[in-house]
Length: 182
Image 1: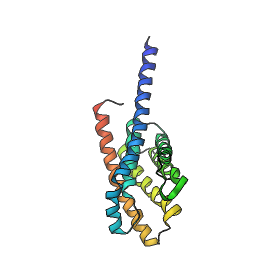
Image 2: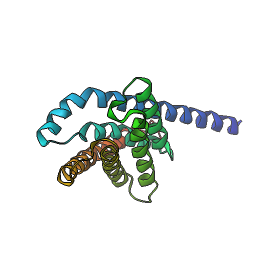
Image 3: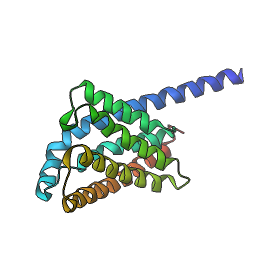
Image 4: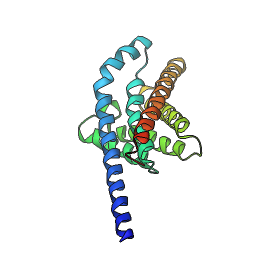
């Protein structure tokens, strides 16, 4: 009898985790799409191609990882985002390589979160490094920026990534402290 109840609880937790992962993947894409015009005003002033909305989008991957604590879930979410972006026609200037623009930061998040460090520090680093990785990939594939502009672009990505990583840690802490997902 006890074993049956344990399996039901484990199945419920897995279902909730999958729902959180998929929802955060999809919400991350749409939030990025919604805030991108506003972010372009800031990046236009700095004369760099972007970096802000990507960091916000990655915050949802980091938060979902922090809540579910499922290894390699950020890679799964990045892949889900990449496929979703392609399916709804959000290819942008990268074309089919857009899926890698979502997958690479997911892998970076997972690698950072595997490190034996405090969860909030990990989330801060994960979002920061994933934002930098996304900026460097975009520069490699599309932008080919001069070094000074690239440095500003990477610094902007790092600062917004760090800020969003702190926010992800804060939100994850609130959710975890509510005791609804353990």
